[in-house]
Length: 250
Ligand code: NAP
Image (cartoon, rainbow, N blue to C red; front, side, top):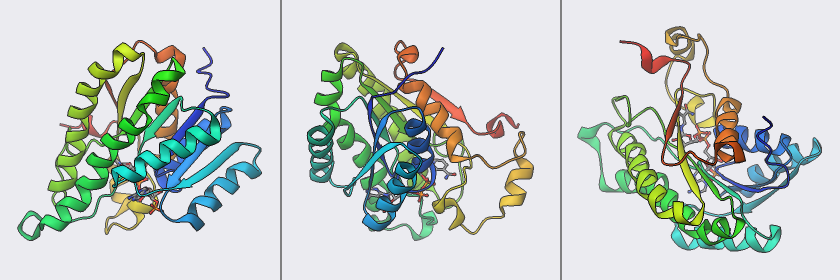
């Protein structure tokens, strides 16, 4: 089995850093044409340049995925530049901490606008091109937090990540007649810029994980690569936990 994606046009939202960069890296090494999408053009251009320097086909589009109009522009630009879209990795997300007692409508909206609304509208925007490809694939980066576990300070985040799974299952039914699959990855704790901003002890977290390490962004990339492959073409509406075994603990 090869999980061949060479020559496929792949969008990775939030691909300039962290998990998204790990996904972009794995697809680029597998020979895909990757478009990184993020807001900060310096960071996105540097991320793309690092992969291009290693011989990969990678460019970037600047867009705020929390805005439906920006999702539409992203899809239009990639379709115009690359001639189509085969795979969308809907990965961009934020996880700002806020205790429930302090929750505000603004904090809730900020998290849901990107994590849930951005996920839905980026899939909607790419759908015509994904359907045209004849083998369209959507891979959503959800989380174990919300769908499987609860963490204080992340009521809004956990709700947004659980909401993504409801979206994935209903979307799977709508996309199936067009030959497009949609699946979700549920990462545990993975090294990323966003993770390193949290006030947490990574050594303690690693010690509590059965596989005794924090995940690497590429661990999520390999799972995304599988869902995007022809070999995974009969799998849709499903989830894959990539967490070093942490959710197995009683
Ligand atoms: P990260 O290191 O903070 O990277 C976030 C990426 O998203 C950056 O490329 C960022 O670039 C982009 N982004 C943020 N807001 C955006 C917006 N409005 N429009 C477009 N792009 C935007 O985060 P991460 O830890 O890799 O997390 C990535 C995904 O994995 C998220 O969905 C998160 O919920 C999920 N996840 C992470 C972990 C973990 O342990 N790291 C665990 C479970 C799930 P710009 O700021 O330039 O826009």
